[in-house]
Length: 304
Ligand SMILES: [Zn+2]
Image 1: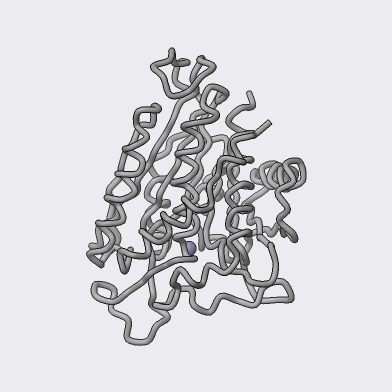
Image 2: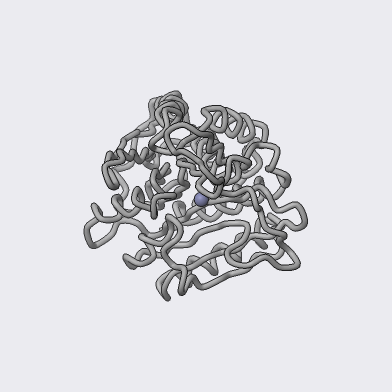
């Protein structure tokens, strides 16, 4: 069960991260942003053969253009993937897995959004690279077992008060087709523990939270500690929040939410020009976070 997890290739994730940070900045006011959008679309487009549908949504915030990119895949009746197989009717339910690809470095004094670097390696090259790898792994391993559509969402504008994900959620109508929303953000730094925080939103998200906790044990993923936290006061700081607050079961996976403590020393380079690939000091944690997210998403998409 879930042999797909073994196909996640940390070297491919690392390659994606190096390319994404190589665009200098993914702030939507910087020329590197368009290069990042093109790269994400190119990577997903190369998998279109497997049945991915790629869409984009353009929006704006205070005159700054933003672009969300989506890749979705339906289940298939065939036992082998990668061929022209008969399709199931379009799924009535979906599972969405998201990461924001935009970056910012406004904690660096004098930083100019249109000109200066914002490498955003940990925040959130780690999550973005994991999603690109999920697209490849799902393509080659599991789509015949999917009962729900899987949507991979590359959100823009998270660093501008999650305007990308917020704009997307605003387009959704009830009854929501999403049975779960999972978000991955900043998961590769923590040098002292393979610890992740699991944020959940409203009681509607409690079942999803428990499913993630169970998946960590069931598949021997080994995130420890995995701390479930109710996002009460700061519930609007991540891309999981608009989904959760809309009443869709929603969780976010990040290495630490809140203050530093004995299992997290703080990544002081986040939102600075120093959030560079060398700060991804816990690649084992990054891989565990990717496995935990994909395991939960596939379980949900395979369930009735
Ligand atoms: Zn982030």
